[in-house]
Image (cartoon, rainbow, N blue to C red):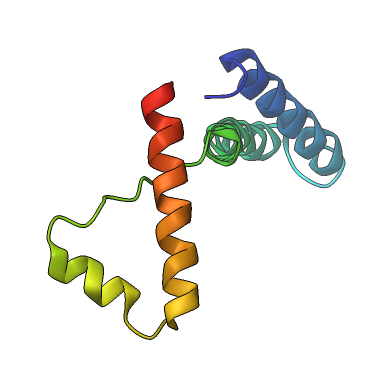
Length: 104
């Protein structure tokens, strides 16, 4: 997860003070503190949600690997619909890639 718990605490304190300052003049101290405490908890928990989403977005994408056809029929189906010239180019490319893989 991105960041630390300190980020969540700072978000909670920020929410606490915003609500405290905005509701102090219109409400009793008990109501103000209750609302501020609820806001602290909500901001603290939402910090986890946003940190998790940020870490999820930043993670490396899954690399997909192509499995080679296991049977001659699978290869024929892959080549189906290609002209003879295109099939030759694909075959040459596959041979080239296999040769490069064997050289490594």
